[in-house]
Image 1: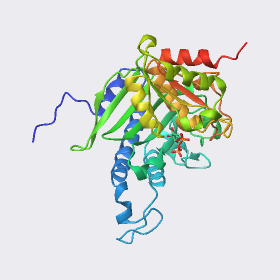
Image 2: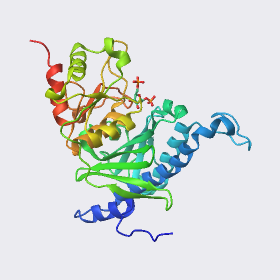
Image 3: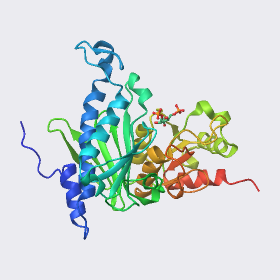
Image 4: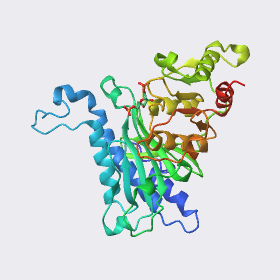
Length: 339
Ligand code: AHM
């Protein structure tokens, strides 16, 4: 066996190095990110076994050993909540899986400065067909005083106040990507040592891309401007920067991870059936909007910057458009109200 390559930084080493360089940093954020990395490794183990559910037992029923098989999204939620509750940097969480936020009521947690909003397992309808799924998270500095129990106001902050945001993609390899204002960095899980290793330093989204990602099945329900933009994408030729490709898995972590690396534009617009779109502001849109902006791209709801939206409820939905800067500019032209 080859010796471990010491030039490769692990997630822990990297975050500690990053935050050491910031005057007055307490290390709490790096601890919190390490905790999320730990939960991700546990979730990854179960996600990798998902295809065995049929022979080991259905979720909600007992498996052959007589143990209850938990639904994967519930499992992921419990893991994330568990590591953050028992860690020392998080004062409370809110999750797409839970109706309300959860304050952590012990001395260390009450004294912590961060809260975390997460979608523990996004795209979980794809599990049965073995398509990549993911975990999405955003971290905010609490607005209540340290020592108090966190309140809803701590979770209803606009996305621009995130101090870090990231996702884990359980794909052909498992990656954790996170952004702070200093940059976006990606870590690939090396299963042989059980560590996330820095594999994608300083990620940036190409200004121009050739991929658009949208659910075409809803086309006739989209606003006219969106339909117009989709037509423009379809009409691209070599002479106009095309041809474009349409790529949409129905798993936003997979679609956005690809578009972040290759350049592209992802849309989940409003539809006649769902005028506010489908995706959740605090659990899906804000973290990706933050990552995309730090990477040089843009994110809007069609009118305003996603990160400026003041949330009014924990599970609020919003239309979402995000991606490469120049593609977003062309889209915005199409969305302008006709004069
Ligand atoms: P989920 O919260 O039920 O997992 O749904 C979220 C997913 C996103 O990952 C994806 O982009 C979107 O729903 C796909 O929705 P649709 O099938 O309507 O296109």
